[in-house]
Image (tube, rainbow, N blue to C red):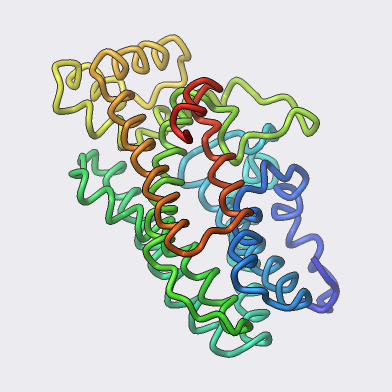
Length: 316
């Protein structure tokens, strides 16, 4: 947080929840994706760094609210900010950070502020759909789920690229690649949350901290209708899976049972196949866009949801 944001004498104290979440950086995959897009866009370094700072504010400010909405007790291996600073200050800090980010965008370029407000509204709508389904315990169709993903994740990536293009001579339309990448990114997150938590972006690196047991299969504790869950409800195991999801359990044995049922139902394999297809589609679109070594490296990193042998088979 730089001094230019505000000279308000209590700024540091009011933003304590934000600084708390900044202590551990996670895997920084979103930063890698932005830098990969910049391989195409070639935005001047000062504008790029300024933009990265703004996007970091938006992302981490959003995580403060996400953890409250999901009743999460851990983020990146640390106690969630609201567990340390309480709900009122954490909610206020999230709004505070969002408005700081918007202020910086408008100072950078008024069009950047307009782009952000337009796409971030889509992000909020996507998040709202996911919360609505969870709180009302209504299972969406796969088509509805994909629309939510396009808003929640795809719109965030589109916001970044359109903002950077304000400072680039490259005005190429990357919407199709972003659509595929956003879908891949979110479904991968859904899958890893249930099967391979260490591959999650928000899972702390080993040198940062030891991950806490509370992180295990958090989506089941939240009662989230992720793609494997949605698919499973059309199978014989769906009734028991739905019953477990309704409990929002924190019991690891019950969660392991649910994951076992998802495997038995074929829902995890179905999700793996979707991920393989999306990886191939992303690489095909990347080739159509004349390639990008940094983005190819991102796609290779995203293959960490697989074991080494399967990764070679998929990318080969």
